[in-house]
Length: 517
Image 1: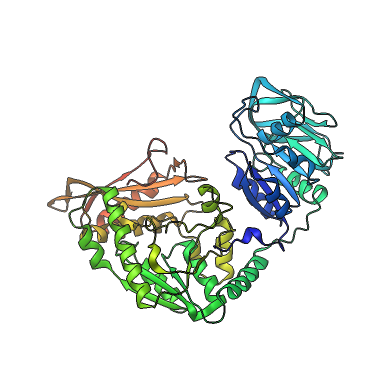
Image 2: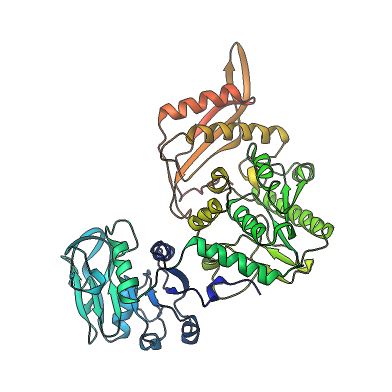
């Protein structure tokens, strides 16, 4: 059974029931920023499970449905009788109204975007706030008749009940989204729910989390058993390795498989960090093996499959060399659990570099010390553990590495070209005060005629990509300045052999994806 931080009864928590809202993770993060631990569970979580969890409060998320559609998601009716404070957000507010006897009807005119709202400062939910607030609205239905015992505590010009409350039952609802930045005092509103209504202690901190994880890993692994971790050099696996090394030291075996398609100097940087750690760091030079297996392959999906297959084989070989440690560690983080729908299960997730590790390695169990954290919290933990900022704040990088940023067949020459071009682009963009969320170079399979000095060239075209995204599900290209792009182009064409043309990708997602392959 995998380690589950969510089940630790020492941690006071807020339960977030997910009704399909796009902001569920943002709600959880805002609550944690207030110093209260939060967990996300499905809307249909059974009452007995909620009782066992004993949350200090419950939040219903928004969602895309209408409560008037019988097929829409609803929680169990008994949840309102538990005596646990509840806050419904957007669709979550409408669920409360509908299930407790109120009415929800279509708006005469929908509200979207920043909206002027009048709130009742005498309400616990809006205590210490001014009456006039700016909130983010996004709804086509609204509460038109309140359930018995509820009163309206906020309104807009189009929505007479923009928030309601039943103080005697500790149930509240807001039609707007307090978790987003466009609701200017949203964090204060959530704080009022947490501390004035739920009486939360506010004792959640990364320092406490780290101490608890180290303690629990020690208890689970014991004094003689070992843990095996596939270290990719990514943020999650690096922080996981650093945390585990604090707990069990040299009984942690970290296998770093160098497939030869990392970014420039990245393998050297990773080795310099972890070979100094108090752990068993195993560097596997598999560059030749991977390149030979990819020879002549141009289809991107086939590349991924080959790299995944070879990774499994190398990992299995190395595990056997080290007599198969008893536990497997993974850098699973909370969004992995939420998005997979496995909040309540203890399933080994597929390795991020491959399509799944072998079942016959004989592990007693899986240890996932980061599975309760969001990415920003993982980064904070990495800094606390002494990892360099360059590693902790590195950009997302695909498991197959540069293999999915090289169009066509992969060769040593192409890898070197892309490593050098990509390094130049990242170096120049890194100087910006506000950086894109992801930026990298792609080596296309397009060759074109050029002129360098008095000579004709026939070389590759490099494409540059820089995007802004909140969730990596969608993105917009970043309009980098022509001055910057011109400087990058000049450097690449002058410093990188084999490139005579540079282009900039301005396509969003959709219709494109962030990566090219």
